[in-house]
Image 1 (cartoon, rainbow, N blue to C red):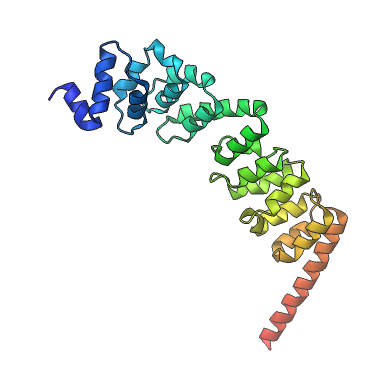
Image 2 (image 1 turned 90 degrees about the vertical axis):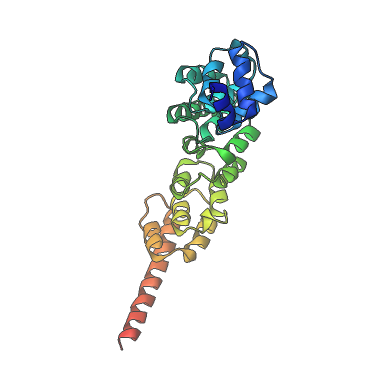
Length: 252
């Protein structure tokens, strides 16, 4: 069986067609080439031939697809990444087929772009940011951006625990506290009230919902306001007395 026949059998008629055009020095139609590059079965030979085509640089759409292919030459990927928009960089960073080195470099480029993005763009980025970018968004001063970040599937509890200490805007910390998932985690709620950045009345209102271990942490915290520490100590005393009584009743 000939080479093109094998490509056709393994990757489909369109991949074989693209390969024939490239071997003849031609330029495949953009839509056809994009469809082939998106397929997990796209032959590496196509990407290797595209690396030498100057006309490829006219289309960021095609460049992004080429960079995401596991057979993309590293020198080409590193040359292309600075040219891509932040939307394209996200796609490169999120694609499991992209080589780890290229994914990491795309995250670095995204990190460099954050300061130049508008609020709307940062919010859109926060919603889908890859792991390597999330830590850089924790200090974002806009509640809208933080709300989007909290719904990012890559956001984790350690991120939530770090946010109160990194974000200087109390409104952003309140977004975390009021989140239907993260705000209900006792460890996260404890971190929020210990940071001293939320209104005292709200922080005191959270205390009764905290487990004893978190209350003790607030009571001994150096960052929590004195009034909050005092309220936590009162609750710790109440919980400990109630626990002692319950143990005494069970022993009799």
